[in-house]
Length: 108
Image (cartoon, rainbow, N blue to C red; front, side, top):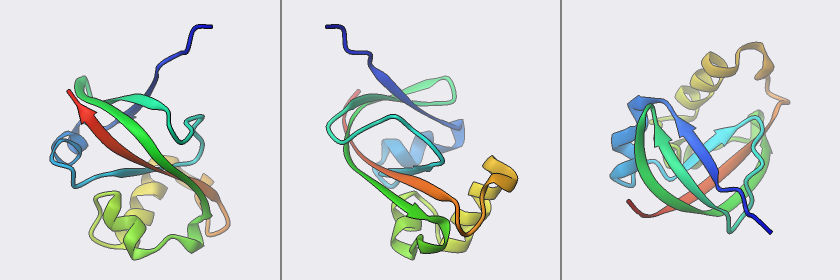
């Protein structure tokens, strides 16, 4: 059975913070990744490295915490939610369910 290798794709601006281990999670509206999956991390056109998914948690936007924001590379919960609204637009409300995907880089 062939296992399809999944990718987590980020904007180029996140390359450095992922590479340095400051950004260790991502919040998505939907993603098929599961705990234990090995994924390729790509920021813009740059390959960052392979990572293992260490956690997947579903929360409503209203339940996101300062810690969730920090692990995702943001300075505050408000900054994180503003970015989610910029990316996903009107789809993001307080009651929207999001997936918090935590990952650990394995190397390049």
